[in-house]
Picture (cartoon, one colour):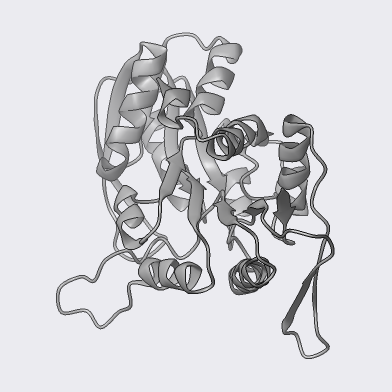
Amino acid sequence: MVFTGNANPDLARRVVRQLHIPLGDAYVGKFSDGEISVEINENVRGKDVFLIQPTCAPTNDNLMELVVLADAFRRSSASRITAVIPYFGYARQDRRPRSARVPISAKVVADMLDVVGVNRVLTVDLHADQIQGFFDMPVDNIYGSPVLVDDIQAQRFDNLMIVSPDIGGVVRARAVAKSLGVDLAIIDKRRPKANQSEVMHIIGDIDSRTCILVDDMVDTAGTLCHAAKALKDHGAAKVYAYCTHPILSGRAIENIEGSVLDELVVTNTIPLSAAAQSCTRIRQLDIAPVVAEAVRRISNAESISAMFR
């Protein structure tokens, strides 16, 4: 059985269409004071339950919907609860820098899911793979790259080169470049403070190339827009960006519209705002087939890794 909160019901509906099953019936609303109110409206006793709920903005509301829904399923005697979290929020604080008095928020969320009775987690393109180690339950982190690669191939770009926007994204970008059989370039940058980046230099010859920046998420789009400018300043003919998670917070849309980026391609792990939908430089791909196949395989105790061989 597949249920959803209010974070991304459209994705949940697409997933159940792929699986040829109905979407589970649950009420998810709020009390008059803003507290989350949920009720499961059908029998889930002994059922294998999948709860689709990205923890995107409004992050705290969506996270609370996730945990109270999971608690409701546990108290209603579901046999297994899988939290399907296409975008896993609170993932950027995944370690404690030396001498910094900060939380490890990703671990806090993992503990919350464990306490309310979640048995398994399914995510898409975690910000950092090591977050899986925070959970005392199985975690399947599937990849959005097959959807991105299929679209890149369909566009038939000339003189193509994949570009990692920073050193940390090299493994992800290299995997895409290998799938496409094209070269890889790397942008070395310094980030003076959060959500700001300064492009330093480019490793690789991108002159007259069609460059595709690959990243797991786009937040304020500052990194991508600065990277696109650096690439064009160094002779790139066209610059596109392919990112799994369209957070698009703050001035992201203004940054994109005022940049030299030719197009930003994202998936629907997070729903687009009205402003993002109206932006002609943003195009959204459907990741529901990949999520649905992962759900089917988990339910049938089949291999997830075989999806990406």
